[in-house]
Image (cartoon, rainbow, N blue to C red; front, side, top):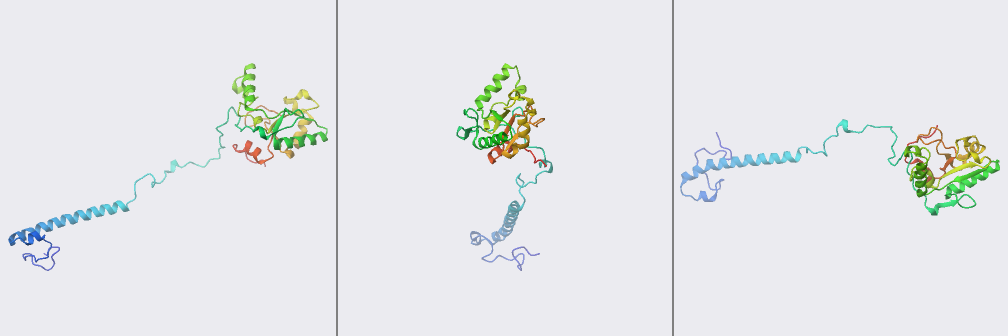
Length: 264
């Protein structure tokens, strides 16, 4: 049998200069030592070759094998969120009332001659147009309350609630918690009928000519009833409370955070 690395040479032949033997051993005069070195060199070379091959193969496997990390792992089916049609939840809701930004003073215009009742510019202008149109039809729309600052709402909610011995939940059915009233947006207005002031802020306002006219015409001026009967917020029915949704800002103020679908 031929040894690997020495093709064609007899097994007992002496190595020639230049074979894979260190120069220091080739210069040794004892030829027997040279012969004894050959198997040792072959063994060492074989071992080194095996190690190199093993290490190289392992290193190649390390480079090519898929890495076991979270980034490359497939997402378990049971961890993928399922599609849902559940309405989005507004985490700023308090006792059924949504949080709204307060209108800046610079945006407010009076809607009464004495300047006490104000609304946001666009809402004020449209309310005056609506009141004028109603008057032409013999209806007197009287603004009772418009913009109300958050601090005023705080007193209205807590002080009046304490006077009437109401819990916050009971009070919230009638008045919004501070920071959650439509009035401080500058877009809401409480309306009365000038012909029957006794119905102001009362449920029987719905029986007045003013309310009937508003139901038929308010949308033309960008106004809508905020709290109709059985409203989703759980607020008491308020036929006198109307809000302006006639421009982009007012529309987004009241509807952006609520998942309300169009009416067919």
